[in-house]
Length: 367
Image 1 (cartoon, rainbow, N blue to C red):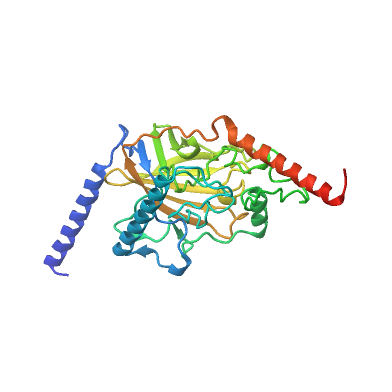
Image 2: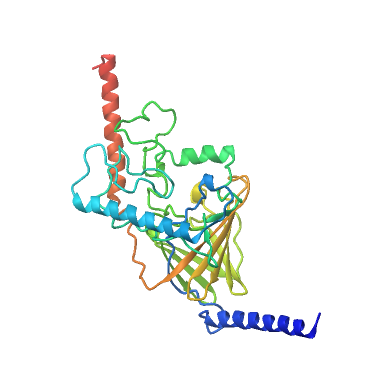
């Protein structure tokens, strides 16, 4: 190696170190020198949780593909808002599809026949663009398994999830279809309904927390000993104890038990001790989640996570997406204010059951 070559390598190394130091200096810090994550973040993104099957193991979009995705979303929202603005009347009997927004974040149609639909879509905020990491646009939030999709659930976990979310899994056809079903019914009482219907937890999850159709803001308040992570959906506030330990397995919490520590400039949060009904997407009380919050130059935070739960999924799964720094304020989300909708669900079920029993008696000829 010539002297000139050695000098070139030294210069490249010096420039790289200088760039890294410059980036480190641009990150907001606490008096103790730790990154200061305190602030509000917008986690909305058009990037789906799971990669479309057709993309296989293609991990990134081109810039043109990412721009096309954003343009398509803007066109859909414009069409939907135009239709909503033109008709503010109640949907017709039997429900109504919202024009221009047929697909939700789960790939289904949540506004089909049998549902009441919506008046307009001003509240929809699933983002206006796909997020980028180091200039590349991922095809999905999940990157492991390599196909970008959640691994298969175990047979036992699948059965338990079907039972837990039974009130979600059948279309409302206006009849008490469960009347002849063995065992407890899906609307027997408040505890029969899924926890998101009861407004105990939001359907975006707490650990990990994922983007949704709306209410995607997060807020972090940080001290030396604790980090509070406020999730807009249902206004869940997680308290992370720094440099602590988890309690024994007998302690169960709706949001799980979170402890944290620093690895360089990355906040690592470890969460266990979930309540049996609270884990994300059918996870068990033994679910273990490791999250990483890495500050970016400019104020954004790269949020990554790994979920391990052998009782639920056949292998761990990991994902990451960007939380964009925002000057917006996070207002309280008053889910089920007054619990009027819960009363309506249970009262409606009793009325349908009475109709079904009357029809049975009439068919049998009983008085």
